[in-house]
Image (tube, rainbow, N blue to C red):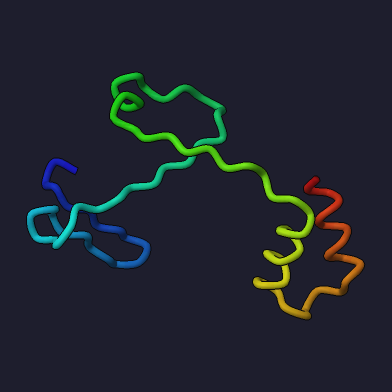
Length: 83
């Protein structure tokens, strides 16, 4: 971070410094609220809260990822467990 660039070991990908980019990067950080983030960090953040998906949206998500690989009954059980 001090070098204004990021290198991801897992993918061997480097994100160059903002000066080298056409536009500054957008960084998305998610939290499940298990611990507090520092106030100095939070003051620099924009917050967006998502509503949990409804059954129909979950169904579409599951089908998009797994297609017809999952039996319909298992898909319904997954949705029931999540909701």
